[in-house]
Picture 1 (cartoon, rainbow, N blue to C red):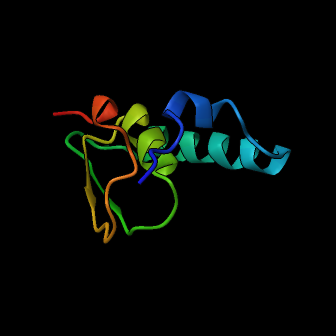
Picture 2 (tube, rainbow, N blue to C red):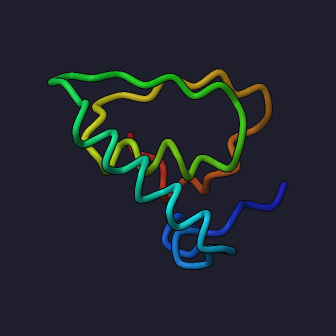
Length: 79
């Protein structure tokens, strides 16, 4: 299985103004509503970019329900 582009590459190749606004709104929501030791749940949809943004915004842990091999390269995974 081929790995996806890095998170940095995916963040910098947005396809539309709508996607940019979605990400900005999501970041504002996370920063405004985060609590200490907050947890998120990823329900196996998408390429992980929303999980990445949540972690960068202050969510402490993301639990994932992935049913396929991890598309994120080993070097980008946090141990």
